Image 1 (cartoon, each protein chain N blue to C red):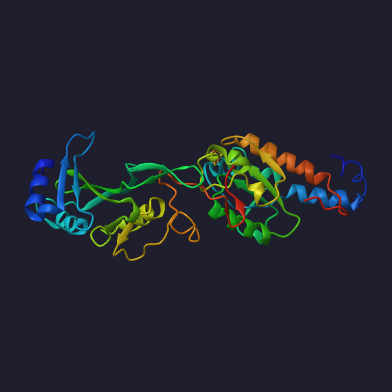
Image 2 (image 1 turned 90 degrees about the horizontal axis):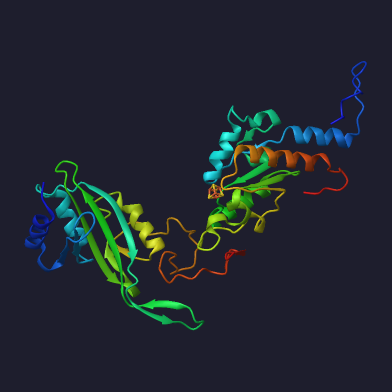
Length: 177
Length: 163
Ligand code: SF4
């Protein structure tokens, strides 16, 4: 069993600049921020290293941080420009009984994060969900399609973005109340 | 309901207007499409179970729309599902009836404002005969809805199709 600081230091020794920060001021597990293009390597290390053994990806969530500039678009509604989208990975080691949270942040306009599907198989559908609802593109994902919304939902429209606007119609059905 | 009251007195002869007979047969064996959507479906299943016993009104779940007379829209209709419901409805043979169960199917329910994925009322896609309000409606309410549907069928005319 390792605490967050030890895990952070081991990662820092192995990955250097790809491991960015440790945030211990959280209500649950400490959060380690990682480079979005190195997350699959960090994940593989955490899963296989003998001192880590994070064999269970408990949850993978996409988050719209909404930390960009609020601007008005042509028809007067607020949209967000700039800022980041984040993905959180909640990890648990069944054998060593320790937990940690990883976080990656990518620019909102073109959020690209490496897929961890080949590290933890269960990430497959979680990543599809984060892509579908928040619009994070997972590089090297085997099958990055929408999973909840219909396949013919408007391209590039991701409902859980904070500045999402409902379409007026879907397949001839009126959407607003 | 008077259809078979006196005409039974002797022999095996039953005299009744054919309209009443048809309507009576129809309303006493409403086979519903076995189809549940969200939390309301749990109440619908409870209605089918022994305690409330939908079966005593002749309601049996069928597994194919081709053999169903009624469809109970029991729950949240997402836009994705609405296209499928429309197809199921079109596959049912006439006469066909629809009970809209719960606030979600009636008008969008708790998703009326922020439900980007919810159809705000199934009557935007298919015609509804009976609305059952509630979130979820208790089995008694669904039974009441069924009785209302039976009333509607009882007054139907063969010449003028209403549904
Ligand atoms: S009306 Fe209420 S109980 Fe029924 S499906 Fe909607 S949310 Fe669930």
